[in-house]
Image (cartoon, rainbow, N blue to C red; front, side, top):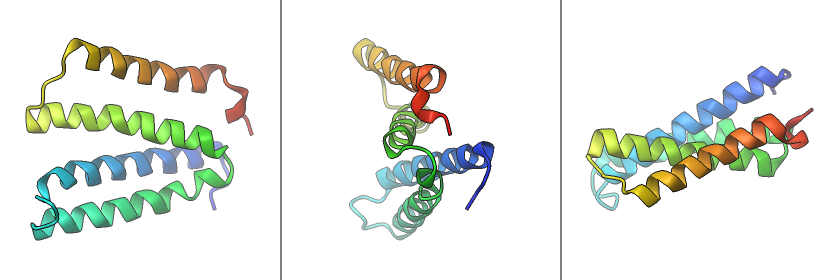
Length: 115
């Protein structure tokens, strides 16, 4: 188990990256009928949850999940925009900015993330 704050956040970032890879591949699975995108999806979701199991031991679960899911939503949306050509309208962009703002507020102002 990582002992430093940096190590725990590094594992959280790695879990987020693994989740983004898994979800991006999920789009290509065609309901799990395509082998390699399905394998990538399953493996990277498993890796993501395994990596997530370390920081959640020392950082409050709600905070870990808020950072993991909020950051993941934004990164998956950016990946879909860049790689799949999915478009965003103004309400979607505003909503994503609010999610980013929420993650920033947690990091900068919440005493819940202190160890």
